Image (cartoon, rainbow, N blue to C red; front, side):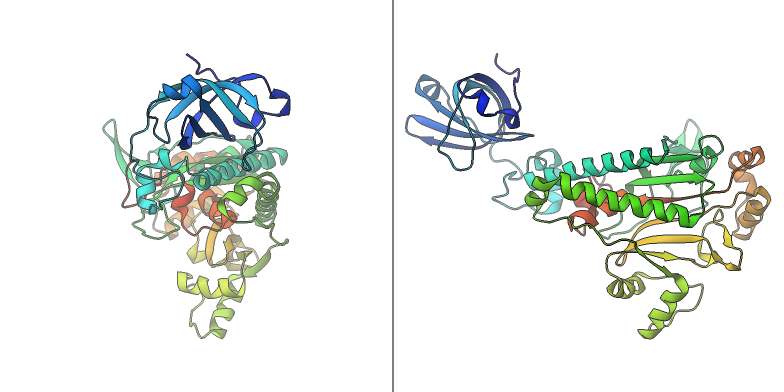
Length: 428
């Protein structure tokens, strides 16, 4: 038994020459040349060449590519251009045999469409382009948590099984919950607002659910959302926080993930700051100049946003939306009650985030609920918190998966999600 690793491949350095090591990984390539076999061994950290000769080569037998092996051997110099060192194998043990042929080719010599790759996602993760995407996603999550913690936000985890339609929306999944009707949460909105009473600044990074029958490259039924809520801040303050987070993510990925950028063939360029802030009224004027008739209070269609995105590529905020287009908890502007203290963060035509200043007066919230045809008694658990001294607060939610597509230059969110869920995909 030689399967206890002593080193990751990336840990092999010149000081290891002449010493025995035990590596573990999968066979990415294999070439038999007479009495010698050359194996390209890969683990999560890198690749190494393994030389098998003599008696070991005679009893090596058939080993399929992508099989998992443990290799005990001596580190030595190599003449191969693609490797810094090589391993002169003394023993090899097959720990997990791979079938042949495999349903997808992890090396990428034979291309597979995205549905085939998603159906065999674990194997697809051996494709270094795919693996690099999820290594970058890891660094994005680390960057977000680090930056928010530095800004004195506290991470929370809210329920995903809820007893009522939390935001009054229709696009919720329902389920039976021990004889009661329950729903999957589409956001942490009401819970994170309540948490500002005692924790003041909170954030959550978690999966949420939306029952939209959408078949586009940017919609999912299960998605990862980054949410914040902050007491004693208005919508301009939380816009600044959102911009600083996006900028820091881009800076961190551009410097930390050089190898991954090379692997996916895309260079991460840090965007220009500050982001433009364009009002809804300005957008109406721009659309009118482009011969697109839209009245105040109309929602912006995808076709409208594509026109605006052509004029404003990259990141920009779209602010001061009409109140009639916003949820019941958004606060109006004092100087013009038809406008809201709200914003979307756009990347060209793509909406990444939505947020704003919230109402914190319970009577005003009840009136707004009635205006929108919602029953205040259905929100009693939420509204009671406002009787305990609710501070003014603002916040936003951002789609992590969409942010990832902007980072790596891919226009399909399914590429950046391990096991995406959409109207057509429930497995694996």
